[in-house]
Image (cartoon, rainbow, N blue to C red; front, side, top):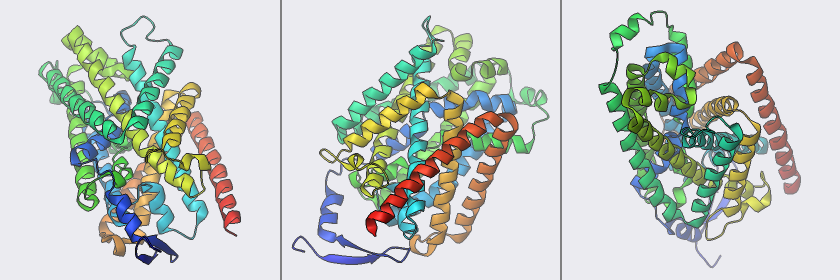
Length: 457
C-alpha cells in the first residue's frame, strides 16, 4: 500500500483483520470538534429526557416516598453497565459502539452481531419516540387540544424532523446547540426541584408513616424500571471519531454524566414527593411536575416546568439521533442493514438519520406510550447485560476487574428479571406485545446474517 504501513491485527474471536494505520490516523484526527463539555452534553442529552418525566408517576404509584432511593439505585445499575461500555469503548475506539463491541468480541457469529445491531437500534428508536412523545405532551399541555392524541403525535413528528435537519446540517453545530440546551435545562430543572422542596406541604418522616408497607422487592423493581431514564450515556462512544483524546474523554464524559443525572433525578423526585400530592403525581403521569408546579407555584411555575421538559426532551432527541444514526451506518456497512444506510455526505450519515427519524415517527403513530417505555427499558437492560458479558470475556485485554464485571452481570440480570416479572404480573398483554417485537427482530436479524454468510461464501 502506498498510503501507509499495513498492520495485521487479531480480533478476540481469533480472526485477522488488516488496517491501514495512516488512513486510520487521518480518520481519527479529522474534525476533532467535540470536547468534554460537548460529550457530557451528548450523554446528558440522551439521558435527561422523557424518562424522568415518565417514570415519576409509575414509581410513586408503586413505592411512594421511597422513589428517590429507587432512582439512586437505578443510577448504580447504570454505573455497572457503564463500566463495561467504558472499557470496551477505550479498547476498540469504534463508533459502532454496542454493535461493534459484540461483533468484534464474538467475530465468529454473524447472527450474534446482526441480532445485537437490530436490538440496540430499535431500542434507540423506541427512546427517540418516547422523548418526542413527551415533548409533544408538554408542548400542547396548555392548549384546549392538550388531550387530542393525533395532535400530540403530529407535534412529536415535527420535533423529530427539526432535530433530524439539525443533525444533517453540522456535527459542530449540533454539538454547540446540544451544549446550550443541556446546560440550560439542568439549571431550570435544579431550580424547579429546589423551589418545590421549599414549598413542600409535608416532610419525609410524615410520608414514611403513611407509607409503611413498601417491600424491598418493589424498590428494586422500580430501580429497574428507572433504567430507561439513564439510557443514553453510551452515545458518547458513537462520537469517538469526532472527539479529542478518547482514552481520557470517554470515561470522563460517561461517568460525569451518570453522576450528574443521578443527582438531578434524586433532587427532582425528592422535590416532587414533598410538594405534590401523590394522587396528583399518579393521576397525571405525563404531566406530574407541571400539574404539581401549577398548584404549588402558580402559572409561572407551570411555565418553568414546561420549559425544562421541552429542553430536556429536545436535547435527548438530538443526542439520540446523533449517536444512534452513526451506529446504524456501521451496521449497514457490515451488511446487516440495507446498504443505502451506509452512505455519508461530508462524513454525516444522512440516510441513517432520516431513516431513524421516520421509524420513530411510525412507532409513535402505531404504538402506545407505555409500550414504547417498557420496550426501551427492557431492551437496554438486556443490551447492557450482553456488553458486560463481552467485557468479561476479554477482560484481560480491556484491563477490567473480573469481580466488577461479575457484579455488573448479576446486577443487570437481576434488573432484567425484575422488570419482566413486573410486566407479567401487572400487564401481561403488554409483555406479549413486547415479546412479539423481539421475535420479529430476531427473525429479520437472522435473515440478514444468513444473507451475509451466503455473500461471504
